[in-house]
Image (cartoon, rainbow, N blue to C red; front, side, top):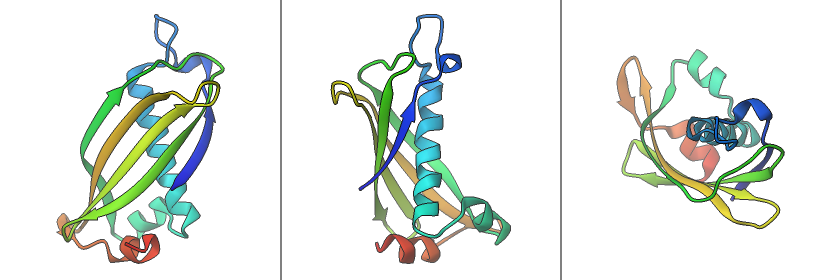
Amino acid sequence: MYHKEFEVRDYELDLQGIVNNAVYNNYFEHTRHSYLKSIGLDFAQLHADGIDAVVVKMETEYKNSLKSGDIFRCSLRVEREGRIKLIFYQEIIRDTDQKICAKTRVTVACIKNGRPIEPLQLIERMKL
């Protein structure tokens, strides 16, 4: 399980004074990219090598709101589905009360020259 810590910034809030739902996607994405770096892969370098990992489906549940100044962590675990898909299970947990604020299931596929490919580099590094 991989974890990344964040703090809510004021500009991420909507008129209700809570984190806008679209911002959670940024937290989730940044955590996935940070995870790749932690296992020796760079998202930008993969692209430069002609391999693009693209989100093909995202299912998010919003449970509890984050507010300005909240400290939280985004956790991640990944599984392989079939030959070409990777599934990232992610949760955002607020530090003060350990409540789950949001959780998502992100389906990613890799493409090269517009065609789906088996993500061998990722599978090897992720030990899947």
